[in-house]
Image (cartoon, rainbow, N blue to C red; front, side, top):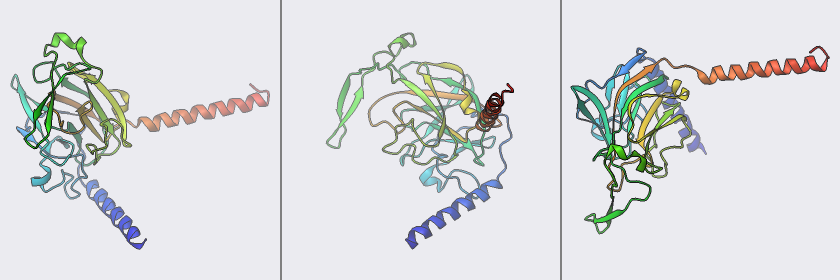
Length: 285
């Protein structure tokens, strides 16, 4: 019992110390647009893990967790699974984008000081092609020897043409999750489904094949982090599937306290309703 109490006190002290340190870190200047202009060839930082309390940066050592990309007070990286998961940069017409495909756990972004923000829009590119083909609802799998006495399954695409989006299966889409906590360890855990988490407060899906500017729904107006990944794959795939998307021009502004405003509205309406009922009871309405 004493050990449990000690652990709780120790954990609370660490969280408090981390919060106090993070409070000293300058918040991002908002609004801003993350354009990935200096993103390196591969970025393996894990901003989903608790921040380094001294700097607000990704946890270290970098040899284990990798280094986050930083821009305008925000950290960009991947979700921790324990391996070499990473994102890339891609250059299109001289412009850099963040690129995520099937050797990764998605793209995770939060403020360096862990503060809340509003995710307003982004340029989202997931064209159907050989690297992001269509599998349909019931793909055929080919089994290969994995070299360890087991098999490695590879689904067979049915099309890599952008004209065939009508053939997309029900599960061929992207997910964007917003969280009310900057750090969210365990998102890629063995029992995680990639969709349902206690800290998730915003959610939106994007059809595979989408290309263009994406507006986020109202739930993203007050979040502390967001994560983009392919549906059904919160972890690096253990089958030979291919998918890929690119991200650019992430528009972020000051958080809007929608839940508080909504609560005040509800409280106000309830008060009016109660007052009206009392007037009716007294015959004054």
